[in-house]
Length: 127
Image (cartoon, rainbow, N blue to C red; front, side, top):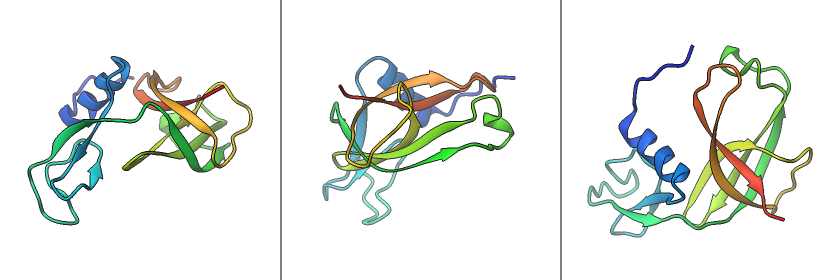
């Protein structure tokens, strides 16, 4: 069921995470964005440069999904969290934990979903 179509900006970001070299895009004004992004939506600047993403993030919020849509049916239940990685916030699924706390430190990774085999961003708690 996996779709091998490539979304260059997003898939390039996932490739970089898998290779241990995650990045974000920074505008001349210092705003941080995740790919794919060609323009800073706050300033209209188009000269975005790749910058190293911090190795650790901090959970800002989370929720547990017990009943999901068809794309994640075999993955439920799962925890979705938003974590701050310096200048950007990233949404992903929590792994290796039954409980998650606001302020918890996490690292970034990529796995495949059980349902479709598509790549998904995941967080792992930092011990």
